[in-house]
Image 1 (spheres, rainbow, N blue to C red):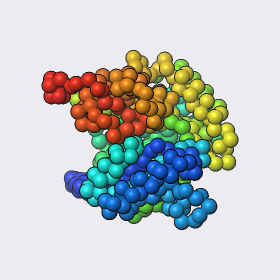
Image 2: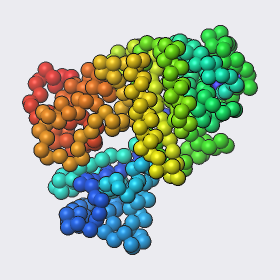
Image 3: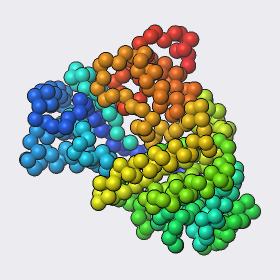
Image 4: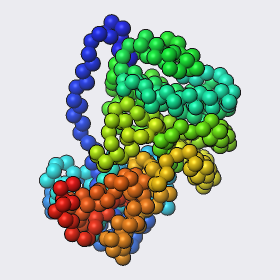
Length: 414
């Protein structure tokens, strides 16, 4: 972000933003077909209970897919917040009901209805021409620069064989920057620490903070601040994502190997997000999210495709899994850390409906992904979950389960 030159001596004030959240409760058991007696009985039960408590803003899995109104309303609401079209296919189980509580009182009564029906709940929220060797050298230099820039400077790196910003075919790297200050200062800093970029004044745009949000939002070129009010993502597609954390610089050999892999799949790319800055001042056990001090940057592996290529989905997923496996020598280990918001199901999942798993076993099963997401904080989070949600009302396939064993007073203090 750049302040106008005329305002460069003024401070920037970012006001508090009050957001009205879109909160939807998705209720399971999940249905592949609404024709079963179980689905019909569950539908009747939840409808009766919600109506009894004067909750009207909900829709249930349509019993008759041939009728017009109910299926349209149900699937429109279900698909609204789905960004990955892999999860709208007919083979993916669908929730019995979707509830949008309008008040806290309605939310509480909705939870009671769910518990009475033994239903689970889900809550929904610059390029330059050059060779591949040149790209490898730029990425290599980036990892020694980006994590150590001043706190007001953010510089990420996108690498792939078919980036939209590329001006020529083949492997390329795109650097997206964000600086809280005047353009002249940003250029001066980059010329000093990253002269290989060859940054010039035309590469930088000065804008307000909210305008920078539009820039990084993924909205199409020409979008305005008012477009941020439209929460429906227009350009939805199919994708698979994985993640890693890097604590020591990747060797140039490792970077070149990664570029070779990326070159084989034009639909794939990686995003390198620098850490450092204020993150470097926060220890891993200070708050639940542990990936702060000691991390240079994170890697997001991403492969995307459109509906017309969905018959090749297994090919794309196999590619990204192979890429991820090949990067093991260059990333964190013991455990190999991951970013929780990507919810990589390859790390392991809890069965959607499982009454046979004992709480102690569930804690150990969830440790497969829990320690990758939260490192040594996992056991502390299990204790918190046990205190706050001992019945595991709020769960997901990679959630943190409660433990049935009593929580000691000493542990309560945590």
